[in-house]
Length: 152
Image (cartoon, rainbow, N blue to C red; front, top):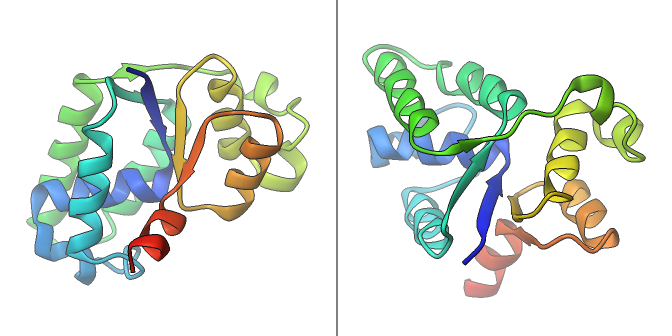
């Protein structure tokens, strides 16, 4: 089985949903998701051997999940800490990622994800541009929006 590299939006969904599934649709940065999306994403993640996280995505996730009131804010922080402790973390130096061919178009975090994808793992995203860049270079990639649209 392969490991999965999760983008910021999906990691935020998992962290908030792990704390309170019903909070997913109320969180201002997760409005495109429903509690059922949380269930589906967790189900997909369970088909992999484990998660690969990186500091860039973790920083973005930490900032986004905390954009809510207490007690969800603190509980989401604790859930993210537990996730960090339980999964593999890969670091890519920003200077290396900034040399990636898609850096100027996609930004630093996506360039980091594409660089990590080169080392193995399936990239799991909701970002169409990131999905297309990964697909164009032959990386294993899943776009949750395609899965959601197919199931609808």
